[in-house]
Length: 341
Ligand SMILES: Nc1nc2c(ncn2[C@@H]2O[C@H](COP(=O)(O)OP(=O)(O)OP(=O)(O)O)[C@@H](O)[C@H]2O)c(=O)[nH]1
Ligand SMILES: [Mg+2]
Image 1 (tube, rainbow, N blue to C red):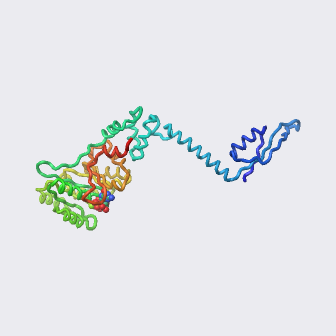
Image 2 (image 1 turned 90 degrees about the vertical axis):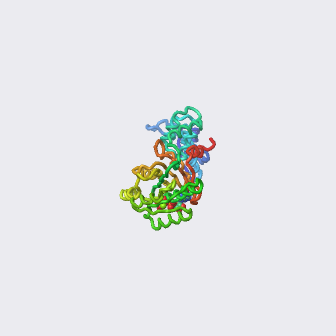
Image 3 (image 1 turned 180 degrees about the horizontal axis):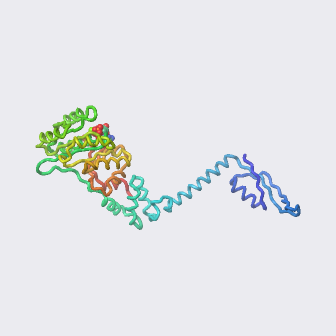
């Protein structure tokens, strides 16, 4: 037991101090009244002395209670919109939406921008409209009526480029009945070309390996009767200038109609931004996002493409290359984020 001595001018004052210091469960062990002598030894002031004690556990409990009270205060502050800088000034009715968007990983400045104009309850349809206005269009490459088109994929290693390409091949060839040719420029990774040829064989599609621009142009010539020519590239480290140069050298950009940047959503957002920034030197046209099944992250799709000109094309889930390819629907993504609000 912890025992402490309190001196006050009245019993009431002493007991009040005991309770505030040791808590409601403190026990008064002893009281004594006495006169405190004045400096000259005359008269003196009446005082009360109390000895009080509390079990150690009670003391701990008291400190937990104090912490809880602090937390309660903080929570109240947060609910009033003062706890989080970005919430300040937002009407109470908008705060739930603010938290939903923040939870989905959407950048705070974007959230503020879209919620700024709401003065009352956030109308979900209007909110979606405001967000959609700032996103690039969603579209997929369509082969022209006459002639063919070349679609190539680029991206950091392991982002899912080859899988995307095979999914596209299956979609164009099996679903849309379009003649497809496959080209790979990737001999960077061990057995990359063999893997590519195996995929081509499994899909029943012709494959060309083009390791130089001259071979690339020859492969295009071979496929001149194809409606869609799909080109795979090696996963290059965009932070290494020489690797990016090799990629540029192996892929004659002027021969490619649609260049898609393939990014896995399973990647830190600042890395995604850096990849997009680095691959812009190749002037990519649109985004493909992969591995939606392995990540809850949907906010990055919005953050990365906010007010950017590159379009949104496909997203993928799962490892089966014959399925799991979807056209990106930004509205559906937003509905997923906002739930049944
Ligand atoms: N879960 C899941 N796995 C995927 C998805 N897309 C691709 N993968 C897997 O990710 C791994 C890498 O896929 P690849 O298509 O080989 O990636 P890549 O970008 O061509 O890789 P490199 O050529 O080495 O740069 C493989 O194990 C794929 O099965 C997806 O949407 N979801
Ligand atoms: Mg690959």
